[in-house]
Image (cartoon, rainbow over all chains, first blue to last red):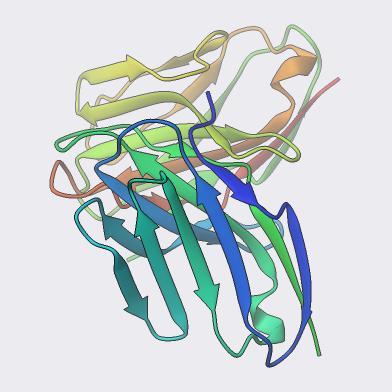
Length: 112
Length: 113
């Protein structure tokens, strides 16, 4: 079953603009991660935020987590054409080994 | 390090045929997983392994078998291919219990006619 649901399904912006994607999930989590997938390629891990964290930064990426609303957002600042990809959130429910549950993804198109 | 490698990249099967998708990692990761990705969907877990000799079912295990005889290799077997198994298959690995961060292979695109 899909735990995370990304919103919007697709996003089209111009280079230099910021892109915001949202993820909602249904059950309590241990961690939430964001992955990027370029067309025809495997997923690449971007950032992980733990359930006791509210915000995390990595380069041009900013992730927030609101466990009371069971939601997360990924902000990409100053987007580039190379950011064009699909972005997925993934959650795991407990510490130790826990399977990941992925959302359906947001497809981001950044035009030059 | 090559990371996670998968072979073949593309495969076309006829209904009823069997085949094995290969996956290997050279990072000495303890955990390995197989996912499938269908159009407009996220990834769904097929099978996973928490160490050599230990495997378990994920969300969509029917029609697939796995084994883990070594730390490095985690092959996925389709016993009797069906059109519903047309998908892109990804293998992933992670170091162990300390993280849920997955490292993904490049994928195998499988078409079953």
